[in-house]
Image (tube, rainbow, N blue to C red; front, top):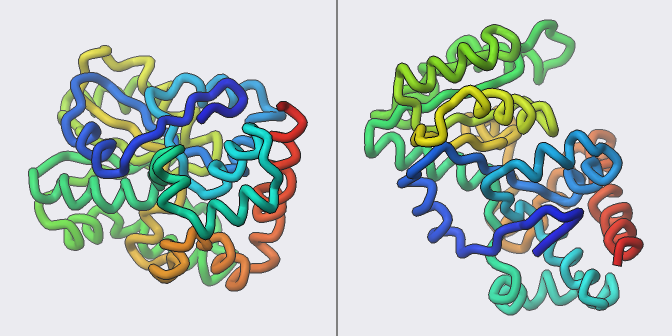
Length: 266
């Protein structure tokens, strides 16, 4: 698949996970979804950042729909085929490789193999809601919570702006960090990794991933959709039901703006 001149790698999930378990060089992984690509379409800086990843992997079914639209199929046909002929679609375009799934499985692998990981997160500066209060409590104990949930893994946590990129790169080398999870949000998390990676030697065996709220899901701060929604590719619908005011704009981008963008670029 290719959107906006960004190659979206088409893998089986387990095969790709195996690659990340044994990196031979510094490696960057971004997981674009339709809203990320819509944003990149109007933000040249963000687009250039995404192009610098070693792997961009499909995080949402909307990319399947977009691929079929690029090939000349209509939106309704593409959507129907994506949701009701999943094996056919995945055989043609590869399996979904979601940041939340990669985060969970890499943490489990890291626990089994005593790996060192680094979390980059936004610090809660001001408590304005119940969510902020819960997030702050988790941040105070993030290292302990993850090491308890995944015994065997060694966790370092750095909050945005607490350390410069060259200092983070030095820490990665010094402590032999195997995985860096950037949880800073769209564009910011990818940009931070690109900057840090510029200070690392090419042979450094470390994987950096932009994973958004994946750590929050794992620790129960945000509730991930039930398995049935995940399997059907309807996590977006579950989130829309739970948080209509917060999610409607993002869903609109995925269901309306993204297909329109793809159709206009054919």
